[in-house]
Length: 171
Figure (cartoon, rainbow, N blue to C red):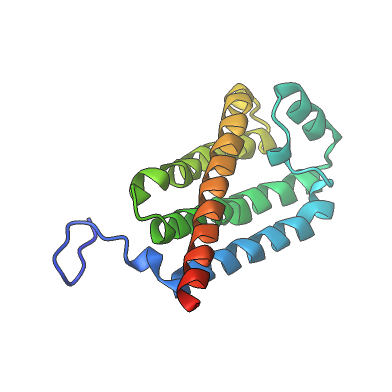
């Protein structure tokens, strides 16, 4: 458990700092840009954007060996960092701007991390030639997107309420 200087058992103060929130946001944007720049090298269609086993298998068949290799590296490096950065940003903004139940509201952001990483694992196996885990991806991908959109909505709501509070206090 994290311990702060006041002796609290668990603290979220670190993640509520503006510098941390900005670092997570900029990191998420940087990783996203790098992933988009990789699209041509991976055949143009990231497996993350496909949910059904049929779609993923068709894309894998359409990919060259070098595209599968590039996609493997992108998934292993960038798509492992991405959920840590975007979900960290969502959780941090939620913790900062919601005064009531911030930890509960941050739960979708925290849950999307292992879900996204599980999806990545199924993709890594598939890109390595083992498609036996693709049925798991078919379930996990919609769950990931659901958690992502819930976490993003909560985060944006928190940011908006923070802006409104700041504008009210600036008058």
